[in-house]
Length: 297
Image (cartoon, rainbow, N blue to C red; front, top):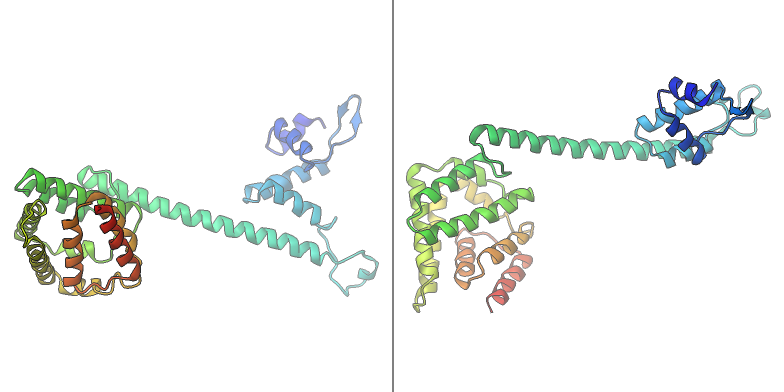
C-alpha cells in the first residue's frame, strides 16, 4: 500500500508518517515500482506508536520502549516447555518499559492535579463574577468588607490606606496563602463592627502623620483596642491566630506590607497588633521586620 493509504488506516497524516521515518520510529519499507510499499506490519507499528502517544507517553520514550520491547508480545514464561530455546525472557525489557510507563503515569497525575486546581480557580472566578461582578481571587466576604470600609472611610487618606491593605490581601490570595480563619472572622462582622473598623483606620491615619512624642504610645494603645475588638468578634478564630505564624509560614507576608507601607508608624502598629493578639513571631518574621526598619532609613 502507498503512504497515503497507510496514513488513512492509522488515522494520521502523511506528514506524521514521514516524521516517524525521520526519527526512526517507523522503518522504511522496500520500494516497489518506484514507490514505498507498506504492509500491515507498518500499519500495526504506526498504530502502536499512536496508541502510546495518545496515552501520554512522549515520543522519545516511545522509541526507547519499542527498542527495549521483545520482538514478540507472546513471551513464553521462564521454565515453560520450550523456554530454554529462547534467547531471553524479556524481564529486563519489561522492567524498563514499566519504569517508563509509571513515570508517564506520574506525569499524567500531576497534570490532572494541576488541571483540577485550575478548574477550581475558574469555578471560583465564575462564582465571583456571578455574585458581584468582581474578577478577583479574593473571597466574596472580603470583597464585601473592603467595599463597605472604603464607602465608610471618613477621609481620603484613610481610603488610600484601606486600598493599600486590599492590594496586600489580593497578593496573599493570588499566592493562595490567605491566613486561616480570615473569612470566618469577616463572616462575624456586623454593620456596627464595620463602622468601628473604619474608625480604627481613621485614627491610625491621623497618628501616622503625627510627629508628637507620644505617637508610638498612642499607636500601641490603638493596637490594643484593635486586638480587644478582634477577640470580641471571634475569640476562637483569634485564638487560632496565636500560633499561626510561629513556624515562619507567613514570614513572606511582611514583605508586601513593607512595600505598601514603608513608614515607621505602620511597622510599629502592625507589630503591636501581633503582640497584643499573642501571635508569636518566628525568627524569619523578626528578620523581615528588621528589613522594614532598614527600608525606613
